[in-house]
Image 1: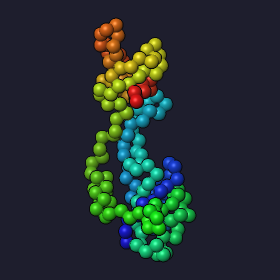
Image 2 (image 1 turned 90 degrees about the horizontal axis):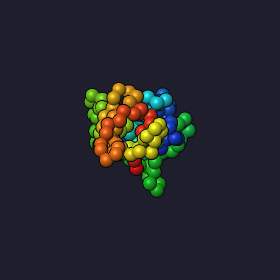
Image 3 (image 1 turned 180 degrees about the vertical axis):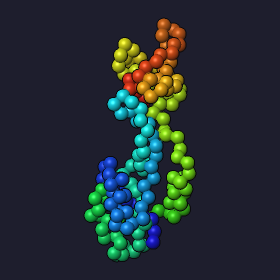
Length: 165
């Protein structure tokens, strides 16, 4: 038995994992907690650490019967291969990912980090760039802007901020 990489259909990692698990496969879908904006509110969601990929434990021979249902499983696009050889993953990597997932859940990846440059997208200050200072509750944030040659703090809605790329 070895660990292999499955390429899933877009946004169907969880569906593929559930369907493979129902068929008796040992699967691993590492997740990451992140902050997202939903309807103007910051929410914490889990999303795949490796979007469109998950790991599955299979027999080591491609002709092994356990490989047959993989491609027809809902949510699965294909088994990742390099040439004719399926991409095998080291057992140590899977152990490391499982240990990290079993530890206390990490703090979610922040939508904006202190010191990050942002642009105000709407309202009276639309188009002005500033520096994200801190979140003030779920819906507001403190941003430092340059106003008439001085730095001023401005409380704005989190939904009005965009990262400067």
